[in-house]
Each structure stands twice: as structure tokens, then as C-alpha cells.
Length: 242
Image 1 (cartoon, rainbow, N blue to C red):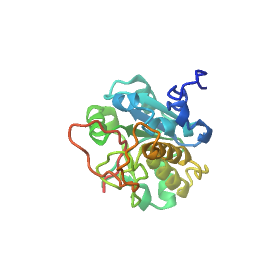
Image 2: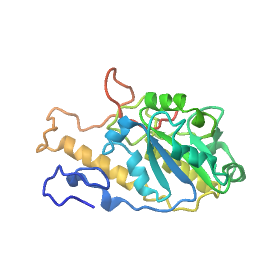
Image 3: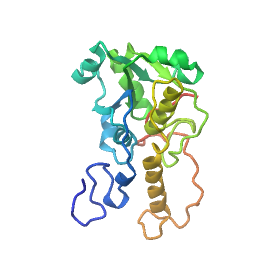
């Protein structure tokens, strides 16, 4: 649903983007056996139009967003965790985790169970670490991770390492690995289309002479930002350690 006012800066209520860069026509929600619970930091929630957590949720019918920092006493999170039929996991990097990239199909199927629920921390790396440190219920979860050797396409955002992935890229990777383990049978081919269109929109604005953000001296080569700047707001989401 979109607002009828003819103003290019009017926001689309669905994708939280300005009407001029609305990506709704590229959204193709599909069902997954796995439920993805996106735990979004309040700072990320305020910047939904630039983050990929909200976009990820739009693409997945079996998903939800819960906003907060400390989820220890969050009713909805604890409801999911205490449901007997659920098998809950936290997607988080680490050497001691269940690495989906290094496991056989049979091992993935056995480990994930029949009704997997994967929690994802959606915020900058410092924010994600704080969320986990405060949320004692999440600390008890089994953790899953994956090997990543592909640079993130989120080239317009600051990130600590080129191999750190955005939320939507991480979920895309996990879905394909779960397909390898026969946990999922969904088609992921067009999953990243809205993400790619968002980046294309923003790059077009950056290099469009008619845009207020245009810089005639800017290089047409976009270089990935792989270092955080000090004392600045950062909007990169779930990251994968190298």
C-alpha cells in the first residue's frame, strides 16, 4: 500500500522506502519450512529503509521482526523458545558452532530437526554483540554459522570486513545450505533481487547530476567500505567473522 500524495519523498508503508525508490514490485514472498526471527536493534529499526532486515522479512512469509536490545524477558521470544515442537537456533559466527558449510546433508537434516526456528541479530556488529551479551535466553541457544568467501554486495555501507554479509545475504546463504541438507525445498533464485535494486537506486542517486547528493568529483568506481569510522552511526547488520 502506498500513500496517494504525489511527492517523491512520500514513504511506501510496505518497503519503508520513498515512493521514487519503492522496491515493492520486486518483492516475491515465498514460504520456507524454517521460521526466521529477526531480532532488530532499535537503531536499525529507525533506519529500516536503509537496512536489509525489513527487506528480508518481506521476502519470507515464515518470518517476523522483534525489536529490542535485551530479549531475556521478551514474551514473544520466550514463547517461541518454550514451544516444545520448535528447534531454535541462533545464527552467529564462531568456531564452535554447527557450521552448515562443513556438514553433510544428513548431518544438517538431523541437527536442524523438523521445525527449525533461526534467530538473527539485526544491527551493527557492536550492537549485535551487546544484544547477545544482555539476552541470557539467546546465549543458551545452539548456534549455526557458515563459511563465507564472497564479498558483500552491500558496498555503500560501512563494514568491518569485505566478507561481512548483510542480513538478507546471510539468510540467502543459509537457505541454500539448508536446501543442501534437504531441510528446505524453496526456490531462492530471485531472493536478492530487491536488495540489488535498492543498491542500484542508491548508486543512481549518487551519480545523478540532478540529485542533491551528486558529486562531480566522485569516482565512478565504488570501493567496498571495510573499516568502521570512529564516532559515526553505522548501519551494517549481521556480520560473519573471517
